[in-house]
Length: 407
View 1: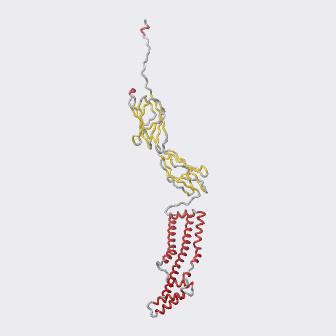
View 2 (view 1 turned 45 degrees about the vertical axis):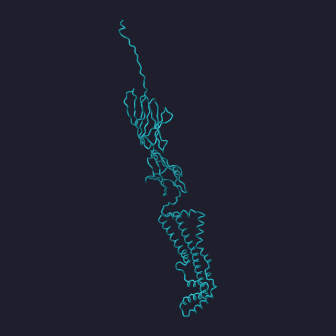
View 3 (view 1 turned 120 degrees about the horizontal axis):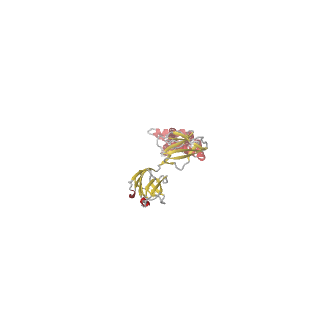
């Protein structure tokens, strides 16, 4: 019974040693992994920060980092962790005895001898003698603290692998965090294309890039940066034009008679801006109009219809009916000089508006067209000349009869 207790105590102490052995490996593995992963991360981040690699290289860097990290953590940390729980292949008691013997020199031979005798004891003729020997040797070394053969504090020397990259990372984050965060973001988002910051940048001086259709649009571009270019160009539909230089950092260009949306970008000395779009606001306009004239009966004139004639000369009382054919138009208003307020034409179909008025006096009128984008568009002026209706009169003439002269 004593023999079994001494041997069991010996085995328990060996198992404690084995667990501490793997704890020691995990601590060392954490330091190794930290140094390798942080060192690789810093190297990749610094290289990317200064070089702006293309997507292929950044993708290779990203997956290489993931692969190395998985290998380092798996080999140096997770494998010892599994072995700590006796999962997988762990060191044998004999191997543990060899390691312990390296620390306690007077124990090595005895410990190995005990383990060998135990293997030989099963079914041996001299089993009692062997067990007695095991008991004796176990008693001699049972007070030896096997786990002390491993000094965890010796792992401090491996801090030299983890601390330098860790301290360097902290210093960089404190001085210029963008050096790490920006480059790391580009490596992670390796499918996106990133342009290296230029020594100058383009800034379009406009609240909105919107131009009224058929009108000119002045573009002002301000350049900011440490090195200003001497000239700036604009690319429109693969045609390049030089901008006018108004000041060292101010350039201008004029879009003439803008009719549709225009995509463009600015460039100089190999540096390009983002692509801008000049949006065109469709201008409301009257493509044409008809004027139907319903003359009063007293004129005995046949009604007629005029096309695109706004200046009219009609008899008093003529009923004038305008029919406007408009494009990009939501509203048409007419302002007559004889009235304080404008009147709105009636929309009776897509792009078609009508208004009726009886002409009674000379007056001018303005035509206002508008839409939601351009509520205050241009106006067109016309005149109406009214021919008054004259009252009937009697013309009296005095004639002298020649026969009276003979009398």
